[in-house]
Image 1 (cartoon, rainbow, N blue to C red):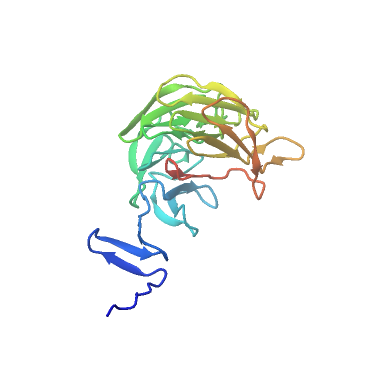
Image 2 (image 1 turned 90 degrees about the vertical axis):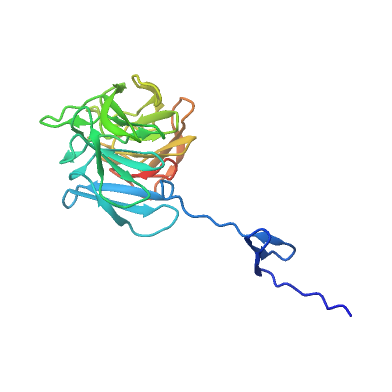
Length: 292
């Protein structure tokens, strides 16, 4: 006498002793359950450094990028600061320069663990009001800004370190014009800087090849003349958003989002709009590690 067939409920789970894998029933066949853990060596975490209001601090916060939620304390920078330059590899986040106490310091944070910064070395000069940095898995490039002391002269400095080993920064080359408070984006090959203050605001986009040294080359233009914008990127596109133009009547703060294709040159194209007019914002993405 044969037994009646057993009906397997949809979604049933079992452990396959032959494959040593957990499986579920999809209504037709047994399918292997795939699991993963978030990559805390960069992809899942974003860091925010220091602040200027209501007081300047050295605090570093972090978020887990794939999930929503409030920022959590990560550790402290080696000095209070704001308006610094940031870069990242998949394992390390870096914050360089800034006012008032961070000056020429280059700090390193390991994404996978929380804790205070490690002093990696010094910039070629003490600077603040810097733009976003550019990086790949090997190099970090820090750009522009102003040296300290009235009238805070603007510099066109590009200096760099090897991200994994740190050390004092070395000269990379010069920007096309000295500027401060510019937005940045990068692929593994190129670094881009958009807009900034020269001391007039500009819409120029510069680029460099990260693996070599040399002066920045003209890439194209943003859709607006501005500084104090922010940039994010993946391996294909650089996206620049927000910013500020002063003096103008009325004072202009933007919600514009532009984008460029990093591998080519040319003017930025319209991407869309932010939900609010924004300047001096921090931006991050989970491609090469996230920093703001």
